[in-house]
Length: 272
DNA sequence: AAAGTCAACCTGTCTG
DNA sequence: CAGACAGGTTGACTTT
Image (cartoon, rainbow, N blue to C red; front, side, top):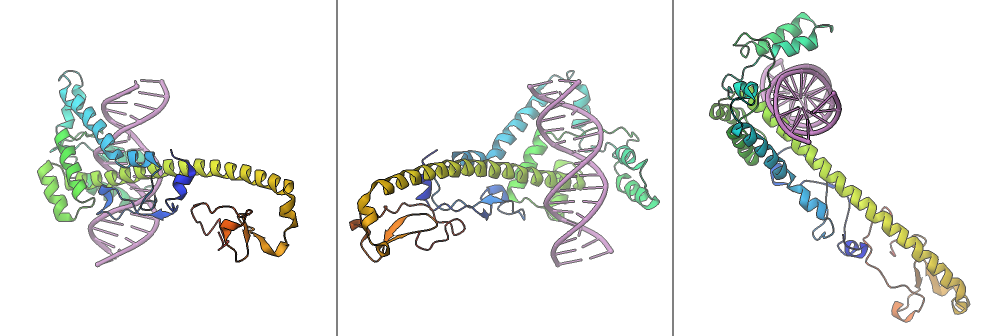
């Protein structure tokens, strides 16, 4: 990470903005992200992390490859239903019953749930089995997600048909995928803010030290004390010393302007 | 066995 | 009001 002066020269502004990730260009998701300005150069973690999806996807792809390439006897239970996406119709009813039984379920709720799963429970088994999408299915879904992170009904139907899944499954996959994208972006933003905080803390420490040194110089400088008070001004905010209407370069007591980034919240003085 | 992953689900909110 | 979505949760399954 570069020095703070590197940062300050970029005019860094911390704030809420919009993500620049390609995945989110066409989405309604507007996660909290940092608007870093045009020339931010100190935040390697952000750059590395913004494309985290790819890392994630790679891991997933590897996992799925491992699953696929595993011997047929190794994980029979997995392969049995994971390829049955057309009939990936393991029952959800049992799960819902688990949750609903014992609670103050109403008849209408039960009816609603029953009707919702009635077309899925076609094998008569109530055992909840977890569907794992095949590598090809995941790849196609990801490809589709890159194009548009939300689906209209027509797209959903078509994708479901292509994938041999139910439209509801496609819908759920997209919902979960959006949620994961947002979560990752939040983590990236959190990392970025942490680094900003560390940098600012360090700069604050440095400025305090500099201030102490300046105060020591002030005390040890008799000429300074002899100057008329009206000719010197000190910004109450940043405590920089400046003359009135004079060339700063000729004033031995004027500190050179530093390219600190301007923050109207922490730097209320217009002179700064 | 604990931790992680993720499909499926529920609920509340928003929008046309 | 129906449908879409976000956010949160559950539980089957996998990985460590």
